[in-house]
Image 1 (tube, one colour):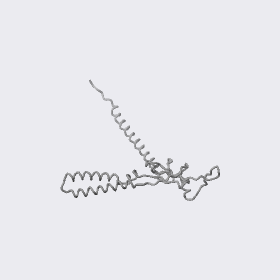
Image 2 (cartoon, rainbow, N blue to C red):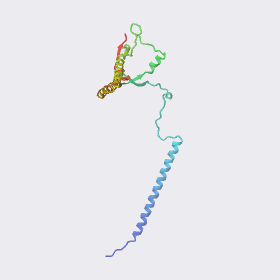
Image 3 (tube, helix red, strand yellow):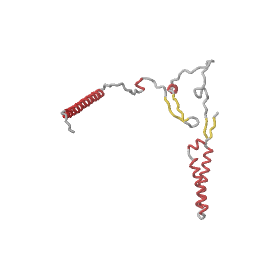
Image 4 (cartoon, rainbow, N blue to C red):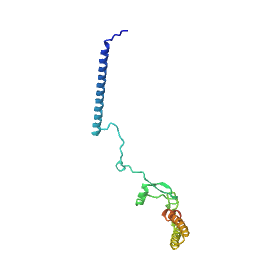
Length: 192
């Protein structure tokens, strides 16, 4: 069997090479165009021109608006966290800028010493004497045990027993001799 080679083979080879060169030239032109666009965009940003509006922080002093109020985290009556609102209007009144107070139907101004709902303010006193006595007793017991350990130098079993008691007293003392324990176990009484 005989085969004949067509002359079109050489021409198709050169056509392919030309197509590849054209694609590469188009890609280079496209990359150059993109680089030019990014360069122009960078120049616009550098010159202060913004293509898109951006969010900007404006301080309250510059905006001219009064702040509504301030919030702070504090502790409530039970020791839990609570968010408190400090009204700037109340701060103005405390500075001496009194606002006119509401009057009752009989023409007299109401007397309120408590909160804004009219509840009277409670005045309480905390007493930690009981806790302090308890802690003092533990310290005295610790001193006595240390003295007994020093005096019982011959009996090893007795020393070990006294050291166990001393360790228990020291542990109890470390739990109770702090401000948190004092606050939790203090007694409060109302003043009339």
